[in-house]
Every structure is written in structure tokens, then in C-alpha cells.
Image (cartoon, rainbow, N blue to C red; front, side, top):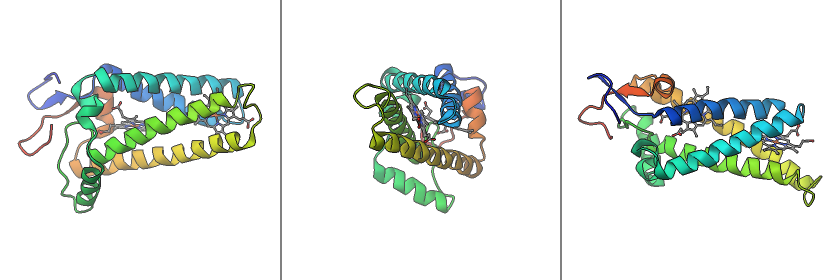
Length: 183
Ligand code: HEM
Ligand code: HEM
């Protein structure tokens, strides 16, 4: 975490930011071309798979704020965070908050499964297998719902914390932590 000015600090490294917005573009492309433009669908899907694989690696060796061991907390802590959000009394985390963290884990796992099932359905052994195609289509819609919840969580947290979190994912900078914040 490098200091920028006295009032903001850098939280998200360049690679994590590039990863995030590339993932959003590739996911949107795969989703919008599903069932219509198969070659683009498959290549954007493979790009999603590569991005997810890279992020898992980055989650093991990257900077502390994006390392899984640095931001994934117990499910009980995540539920407590959601409950305190309802009263607007949640603590401010400089990195991912515990509820957002589990959403990130769910998105990465779901995207991994989605791209794997897509690839599987192109192999000789599973070509034209109905249940697999249905599972792939269902998971695609489920992922879209999760992305909707993810963005709703970002908007809610931004409002409660009085900080534009989407902009922070572009610039990498957030307000410097106060004495009560969790870094
Ligand atoms: C306009 C749409 C989107 C916005 C505004 C947005 C915004 C954000 C923000 C602000 C964060 C950081 C949250 C925090 O401060 O803790 C984040 C993280 C994340 N988002 Fe999104 N997001 C969008 C779309 C997506 C999509 C489509 C996906 C996946 C399909 C996605 C997956 C993720 C993941 C995996 C992270 C964790 C980043 C990391 O640590 O590597 N997001 N998003
Ligand atoms: C995040 C990535 C992906 C998403 C969100 C996604 C989503 C979807 C959805 C929603 C459908 C159902 C379309 C329909 O029934 O009209 C579909 C179909 C399909 N997808 Fe994906 N997919 C992804 C990645 C992949 C990958 C990596 C491959 C393979 C290389 C793939 C191969 C296919 C195939 C073969 C179909 C069936 C097309 C058909 O009905 O003829 N997908 N996908």
C-alpha cells in the first residue's frame, strides 16, 4: 500500500484493476453473445477463464489487500457485517469488506465452473449432452444475478461509507484510514 497524498492511500494495484475491468468486459461479451455469436462467446469465455486463473494465483502471492488470506474472513464475520450495514453502523474496511469478500469468492468459483462446463460441452465426450448445456445456461443466469448483487453491494457500501468504490477500482486510491478503520 503506497502513499499518494496525505489524505488518500493506494489500495488496489494496477494488475488487480486491469483484471477487474477486463473481467467485467469479457463476462459481458460472453453473456451477450451466448446462443448468437458462438466463436466470440467461446473466446471471451476462455478469456474469463484465464483471468480467473490469474486472479487465483494473485490471491496467493499478490499484495496483502488482494491476497485471499488478507481479506477472506469467517462467514460469521460476513453475516455480522451485513447485519450492521442495515443500521449503517458497519466498520470501514480499507480493502474488501467481509461480505464483499465472499461474493468475490462466489464469483470466481462460479466463473471457473461456468467456463469449465462450457469447454466440456465442446468436447467429443460431452458434445450435445442436454443436462450439461442446461447446467451451463442456468449457471450463466445465476452468475448474472450474482453480478447484480455485487454491483448493488458496491452501491450500498459506497453510499454508507461516503466513498465512491467504483472510482477507487479505477484509480486504485481510497480515503486514508481513520483510527476506527480496519486495514
Ligand atoms: C459496472 C459493473 C461493476 C462495478 C461498478 C464493479 C465494482 C467493483 C468494485 C468497486 C469492487 C471493489 C469492491 C470493494 O471495494 O471491496 C469490485 C470487485 C470485484 N468485482 Fe466488480 N464491478 C462490476 C462488475 C463486475 C463483474 C461483471 C464481475 C465478474 C463477472 C466483477 C467481479 C469482481 C471481482 C472478482 C472483484 C474482486 C476484485 C479483486 O480483488 O480482484 N465485477 N467490483
Ligand atoms: C463467463 C463465461 C460464460 C458465460 C456467462 C456463458 C453463458 C452461456 C449461456 C447463458 C448460454 C445459454 C445460451 C442459450 O441457451 O441461448 C451458453 C451457451 C453455450 N456456451 Fe457459454 N458461457 C460462458 C463461457 C463459455 C465457454 C468458455 C464455452 C466453451 C468454450 C462456452 C460454450 C457454450 C456452448 C457450446 C453453449 C451452447 C450453445 C448452444 O445452445 O448451441 N461458454 N453460455
